[in-house]
Image 1 (tube, rainbow, N blue to C red):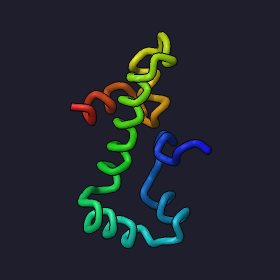
Image 2 (image 1 turned 180 degrees about the vertical axis):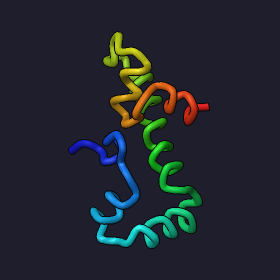
Image 3 (image 1 turned 90 degrees about the vertical axis):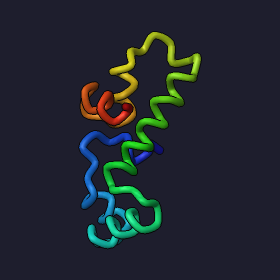
Image 4 (image 1 turned 120 degrees about the vertical axis):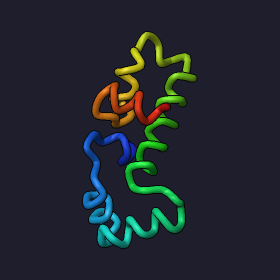
Length: 84
């Protein structure tokens, strides 16, 4: 099964609904338990996925932009901003 964070445009309401929580509940839990906002949490998973793919020799000749899009980033500029 594909990881939820790889869906481009993933939103807090979508994840909250899937988990059977209200958006406020999910946001509060992420902030208090994990210490990150929803976007920080999702982007951390996406950056980790990109790093994992870059370290994998089977990635071949995929461009960084292609790998970033595969991980769920909407564009290369967003990836660059988050990766810094």
